[in-house]
Image (cartoon, rainbow, N blue to C red; front, side):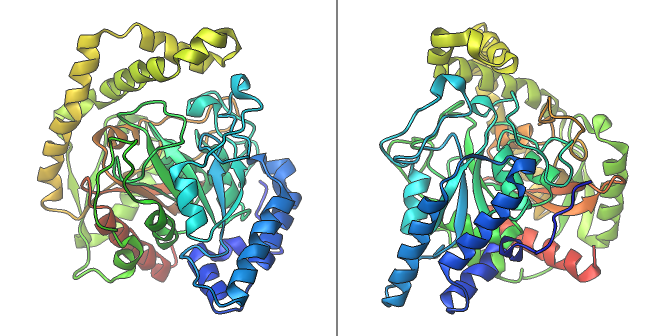
Amino acid sequence: MSDITSPRPLSLDGALALRDRIAAGKLSATALVEDCLARIAAREDVVQAWAWIDPDHARAQASALDAAQAAGRPLGPLHGLPVGIKDVIDTAGIPTENGCPLDRGRVPEADAFVVDRLRAAGAVVMGKTVTTELAYMHPGKTRNPHDPDHTPGGSSSGSAAAVADGMVPLAIGTQTGGSVIRPASFCGIAGFKPSFGAIPRRGMALQSHSLDTIGVFGAGPLDAALLVDALFGHDRSDPATAAAPPPALLRHAAEAPPRPPRFAFVQPPAWDRVDPDLRAALESFAAGLGADCVKAALPPSFEAAADARRIINFAEMAHHYARYWHDGADILGLETRAAIEEGRGIAARDYLAALELPAILNRALETILAGADAILCPAALGPAPAGLGSTGDSIMNGLWTLCGTPAVTLPLLRAENGLPMGVQLVGRRGDDARLLRNAQWLWQRQAGTGN
């Protein structure tokens, strides 16, 4: 197994700590970027997390930020922090190829909404991280930094691996099934998928307008809160978003809850497929929470979630990816081609029926969440599978993406082979701040127990 070797990269200290050091003048943006570039130079041949990176471009941004700080200008909330951006999110003047040979050489003229927000917050756009082809299942080149013979997960493969390996403290990904939570679990970091519609998707390669959600990666829940605080918002071009006051996620996440949170331990559909190693570890973990964790059962209606999500995903994928189908279906990976082909054959009545299910499921969740602060469940079927031909199964994540609920995974468990396994927490739709606060409480609790 390949370890994260010394010297220990600064990024592993966490984004929040690095932000405070920069603000206090104890660390410069330039020094942090140089540390990240050194880590990338040392490890990229193994991890292969980057689709595009230009060291001089990163250095120029850091130098400008240091000059602004020296001149006494106000600092943004992400001042000097390098961020990796999944290569399905547009960056002006920087290649955005969507992991697809049909988009090779594509250079957008405008930044995506989230990139606009990053720049305004003082972040360093470090580069573009590897995505699976069109953010679906055909793997890219990235390997798991804990063991390069294992998948990092997908589709946000490069973003998760880059943060886990200490190449950057923060990264952005997207989730349509399990593409933030699963790779975060496989790579041993925190991943946060906000409520559907919380972050505008302007400038992102849209695969499924009913499911696509932008998410983030960091060392822990407060790092995730720091990043999404800068990204939440409203954009008229994305009808899934709504005008709302700033959520102040970081402030709420850092607050102590008024009482210890109560978790509902559920066994989602396909629980029988969960790796015995993870099943035993998660049951032991839940038992260790004592009275703070109770078992709960999902209603039978959740058995239909996987099929409904697949119908919605593939039908909308066939629509949004029609140009790829017509311009070069034979060039696409087998997984991408098969999904689009299946979507082209879905009947309108089945698609419309599937769209009705999320409202039913969310009403059912109210019963569970009326007696608990968050749902606790697996973040994946087990540790990262061996081999690079697959990015793993999203069955433990897709139902929450379908419901549009916020979800976070914390790297709190280890498999017998030493690979990380995530504990997934799920909250009520729109209750992102509370979920992050509960995640931080659990994170601190486990740190205190040495787990």
